[in-house]
Amino acid sequence: MLIAQLDNSYEFPHPDTALAEPNGLLAFGGDLSAERLKTAYRKGIFPWFSPNELPLWWSPDPRAVLIPGELHTGRTLRRFIRKHPYQITVNYAFEQVVYGCAQRQEGTWIGSDIQLGYQTLHQEGLAHSVEVWHKQQLVGGLYGVNIGTLFCGESMFSKMENASKCAFVAFYHHFLRHGGQLFDCQVLNHHTESLGAKNIPRKEFLRHLDQYQKQSLQAGCWDAQALEL
Image (tube, rainbow, N blue to C red; front, side, top):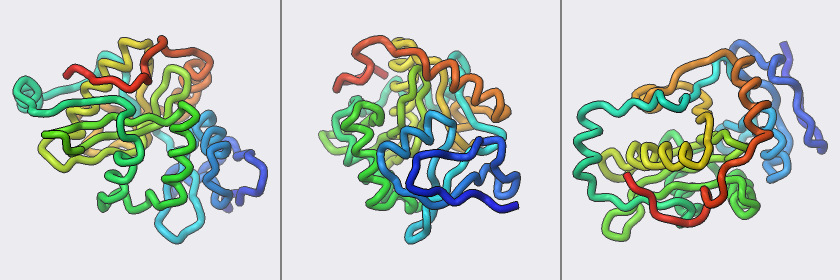
């Protein structure tokens, strides 16, 4: 089965037409403009591809999510959090967080073109970062895209023990306090599964997305601020 090649419009095929193998591959091509990225996320589609390749667009089935109330923090992580040496903030250093994620081996797909796209989304108030600081040095963080009351996590990084997990735990509680209703983790991996993420059918995820993107978070969620852990 062939996949669609995107043109200069911002239209995407319906996620139901994505391939089963590789799981969720829906389309290729197009640019990485903020407008295209916004259209993609609102339809449950995200980019992921290797450097020097045309953009590939995905909507896997099943979809990994973290549901409010299902965050898992094991005994070891809880013990670490009680004694953690970190300061955690929101939207203090978006570009640095994206760059930190891009330096990870798994983050090699985050090239300069897609970094620019997310930076534009950040300037428009749609993409956000969580930073972890130790002695005024950035040692971890995460970033993603907010659609209504849903947060689409894109990538995270750690330079010190449990830094990205601490970022997520602090952000999880902050997001829920402001009316957040679902975390999109895209594809289940060991890291997100250890925090309580699970797979749900794509159709169920798209129903949630359709509902939650029509709703709004409480004011102040994305103001630059320190978070408690």
